[in-house]
Image 1 (cartoon, helix red, strand yellow):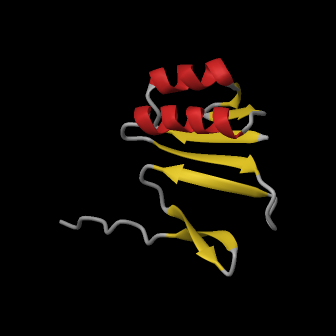
Image 2 (cartoon, helix red, strand yellow):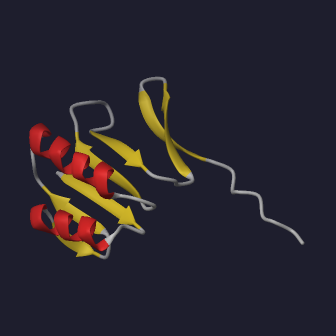
Length: 98
């Protein structure tokens, strides 16, 4: 199983993902591909994401049963902890006061 979620993605990237995968909700794409195709799709995402952000999750033979990769600016960042990949929230950007 392969899931890609995109935010603020350009229309050409969304169209490219729709060629390979099923868009089950706005910005959420699902498919079932092996490593080679997964890496090709992720390469397209990385090359076309521009100012947006994306996360890709796929089934993997590890303790969690899945693995994931991210690209772009997002408050949720993956961190490795004791053999598990967890999600750490970055602090919000400071607001500009007048």
